[in-house]
Every structure is written in structure tokens, then in C-alpha cells.
Picture 1 (cartoon, helix red, strand yellow):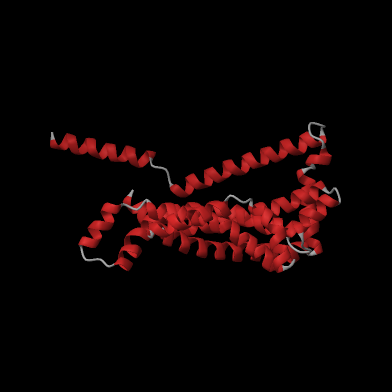
Picture 2: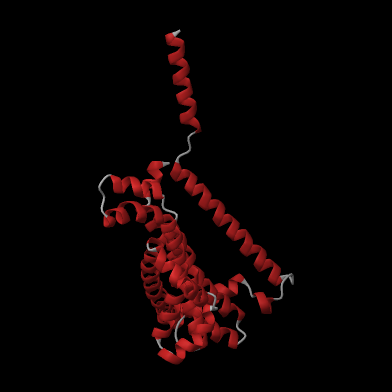
Length: 277
């Protein structure tokens, strides 16, 4: 009976080993499917525009869009304008994240301060942030400062509210247990509250990435002669649909790179959650 059980267990292990998929191979298959789907969609777009399914004046062609991207690269527009938008988005994102995270942490920990200032925060948050762009341009000029401040303002509220919610959702029982074990306030904040709030904080960061680009691009579209927003405004002003889509494609690439960085940072800082699962 023992030998039979051993044989049965070995065969079961062999079956599990056979059905176990190599993670690298699975990732390659997934990316192959994504690339194939993307190619099919581009093919439908190209064929539809050329065969009259779509009006090419409004939709352009994928081939024309790639030609417009190549022309921007040859003219040096990508090298000249893309770094400006990236600087505005990154600096504004960092400033808004730091300030929003600190204030959200303070409000989440000190409930009385939150109750006192909550109506003012909600009142400012209810304003459409894009409506502040002309005011920032009036205050800080048409330079890069206005775009950075607009971007930081937009990111601030997203990070603030997520950080505040994450701190407030921390288990009070766990905090009390750690305090009974002799932990001081800064140790409770560092070892209990912050790890508990990190998930909510990173949700705010990932949501903030496209909004950081929105702040930078909107500021450039209103008053600027540099940046991807300027390229977009110039293309639409010339009724250049392919150029407009090329600028949008650049923004998609920038946003994807930002999101990839945030996801990598989240996986690194929250690697303990994988162990827990």
C-alpha cells in the first residue's frame, strides 16, 4: 500500500509539473497576442480609411501618422518639445505627490485638523482644475513654472484623498496592539500606518499619471511655444489630422513609460504582499 501511495503521489506531482506553465513563455505568448491584436486594429483602421469606411480627414491613416512621427523626428521636434512636457509632468507629479502625501498623512492621523479644514479642501477640490490654468498663466507667466504648478495642483488632490483614506483605513486594533508592545508614535506611523496606506497611495499615484500629463499639455495648449501640447495645437490649427494623432501617440508613449515606472516601484515597495499571498 505504501508503494502504491508513493507511486500515486509521484504521478500526481508529474501531472502538476506538466500543467505548470513557464512564466516567461506565458508572458511572451501574452505579448504576442497583444501585438497581433494591435496589428489587426491598425489594419482595420488603415483599410477602413482607404476604402471609405471612415472619413480620412477626421481619422487619417496609421501609415500617415507614422510618416508624421518620422517627420517630427527628422525635423528635431521630438527632441525639442517632448523633454519640455516630460519635465513639466515629472516635476509637477513629484511636487504634487510629496505635498499631497504629507498633508493627506497629517489629515488622516490628526482627525481634528481634517474636520476643521475639510470644507475648505472640498471647496477647492470642486473647482475644475483646468479653469485655474489661465489664472496660473497670469500669475506665473507663460513659462514652464505655470505648467508645473498646474500639474502639481491636479496631482495633489488625487494623492491627498487616497493617502487620507489609506491612513484612516488602518486597523485601529493593530495600532493599539503595537502601542501596547511599547512602540512609539513614529514607530507606529513608520511600521504600521505607512505600510497599510501604501496600497491606497499607489492607487492615487497610478491615477495621477495621466492627469499630470493633462495639466502639462493643457497649459502648453493655452500659452506656450514649446511642448507636445504646442505640437498638438499647431497640427489642429493647420488641419493636420495625422500630425495631431502623432502628438497624441507621443503622449500615449510618455504615459505608458510613467505608468510602467510607477508599477515597478509599487511592486518593489509592496513585495511583502506577494509573500503574504
